[in-house]
Length: 623
Image (tube, rainbow, N blue to C red; front, side):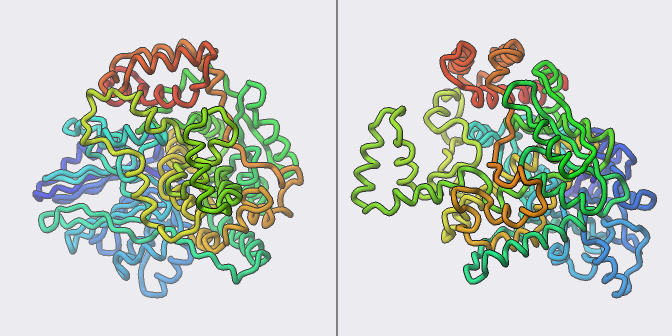
């Protein structure tokens, strides 16, 4: 787990090694153990290393036998032992004991098809000196980040945006469409970032560049999540196979030369991971909670840890500590992500780094196995769907003129829409009407304004023939998960120089989950039903029927109390007036603190953006 950076000069001018050093220095937290550089002619790359596997000989960048191919990789290739064995049989020689070197030798044999053999999380850049070509790729789910910017003279890349911004020639300007999407979804979706002209390489994509010959940067998709329900396979088949593949995934994810631990919450995802880990030995676990009543998961986590038998550690957060560290955490994120649990994740990583260098976490289980409560709509709405079409139309027209507080209105309105018109992801902050009120419409060019329907079409067009649940899962796997869930997991763990591993996001496990019929995932009013049955016998009994809970953060309470002054200073700041309607923003704040309405999530979204703007655009706030 590390940080990579570098550049390609399209005019075949030599790379400035001082610039590589400057970029790498911004990411010391990603790799505090060592640094490395390679540059020759129009190509150069830098590397910051966090030692996890092959502590003695695993330095990067590294090359093949004749130094004609060089690579820097951020991530882990979990099946490297098996790949290494096959490559040795083909005659390849290895000079390290690590995982990155297998990518070079696979590339020598198979070119871009080497990606099909890799099982893990990665973003890497490879320089093929013989062909004068750059080859870069990102893992299937987007567990590891890859950012770049390109112009007529150069291609610049890095694991973090701040490394790219360290070069004075890079402009700091808000991307308007990403800002508008952020107000709706609390993150900026791939491939855009909140910075104009800085782009994310989407998950499951690669790029090839030949400087001087073809200076275009056109990402090519090598993998995408495809759902193929198999109703000819029994429920029992899936429960057995899920546990089998989970154990296999845990086995290969455990490959490490440093200490391992795991995050533990009150849910079944992390508890499943920890239970399976504990079959292999004793590992420490970590949790985070809040002092407010109803928001402390530490008690449940401690109960689970006692049942499994782990050495458990926890941290209890207060508003003052949260406010103290929030600028630093937003700085580490690179982009504004208005997920309140991101900061909580920072603190649990902070305590974990005192004991381990690798932590296991349960990200991905909800997306693969249908764990979010909103997925139950696909079942709940069936009562509306069986009504005759003319009755549905009458009810829909009636609901449109009903007052908002009439029970059943939302059910009818949602039931009248297909999934692609209804599902906006797990977090939906400002709808189009609210967004039109909160932005400074006079300053935002209408040409740059695409509403959420245009945004959603990009994703749903890829799965037009899917069933309702699979459409919802597809959107969340390709947008929500890399844009929010995995982004905060990577940035908050790396901020603490900790490697985070997510065994549920093994592509072989996904391929099994993609075959599971929706009626096995949502059954008897229960989400993740098939997963719950699969892991029932390895979990403490009190967890089996526990409903999915969003990670509870008392933002609404804090804004009214412990964070009120902190929030007020940021909300009243004028530097974002060119984007946000200041009068409307302050009105939301006043209504909330006087308890006229609960605008907690909206205010949090606005505050995080304004804080990010001060850190990265105005640069008048220090992390």
